[in-house]
Image (cartoon, rainbow, N blue to C red; front, top):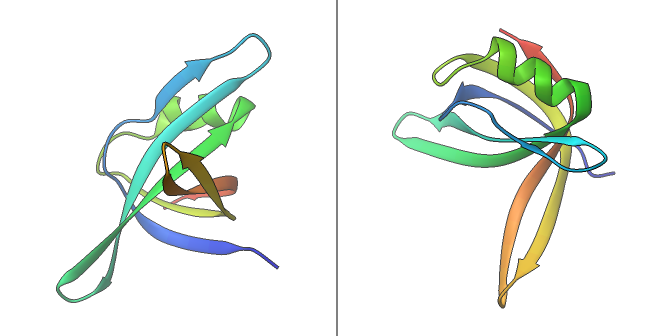
Length: 90
């Protein structure tokens, strides 16, 4: 089972990209998992959820997300993203 839950803060406003068939939201979360360490997670969300996040959440706001980890291959590099299934406003 591929599932992850992260609580953190948005590092920037949600960026909306519209395609012919859907809406995609792209954002990052900073997660202070240890005293002096911060982990950054790139996230993608689709449809109505993307529009809701853009409307109500801004850079620095706290959020909890639940999703799946995915890998994308681009120019011989692997990029890890989280495909958001659910989110909760903190």
